Length: 136
Image (cartoon, rainbow, N blue to C red; front, side, top):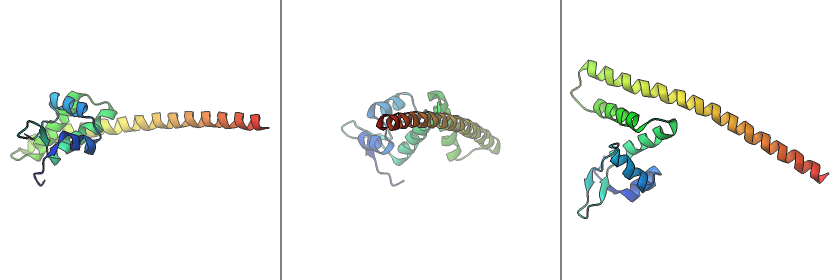
C-alpha cells in the first residue's frame, strides 16, 4: 500500500457502494476510515477499500453484519503477527467455515438462477409462438 488516502466519493465509485451504505458499514464497525482530512472528511486507504469489497461480496450471500464483522476480525488477526499455532488454526477454522457457507450459498444461487433463466426462456418461447401465430 502506498499510503494514498481517498475520500468517500472515490471509495464509493471503486466499490460500487453508495455513500449511505459505506457510512452504514462504518456505523456497524465493519470499516473505519483510516484518517480524517483537516476539514473532517473521511479518508480511506486501499486496505479500507479491500474490507468494503469483502463486505460487498458477503452481502448477496446472506451473511449478517455480525458474521461480516467476525470474518473481518479473523482475517485481520491472521494477517497480524504473534499468533500461536493454536490461535492460527482456530482462526483458519473460522475462515474455512465462512468459505464453506459461501460455497453453499453460491450453489443455491446457481439453482435459483437456472430456474429464473428457465422461466424467462419459457416466457420468451410463449411470446414467440404467439407472435408467429398472429403473423400467420
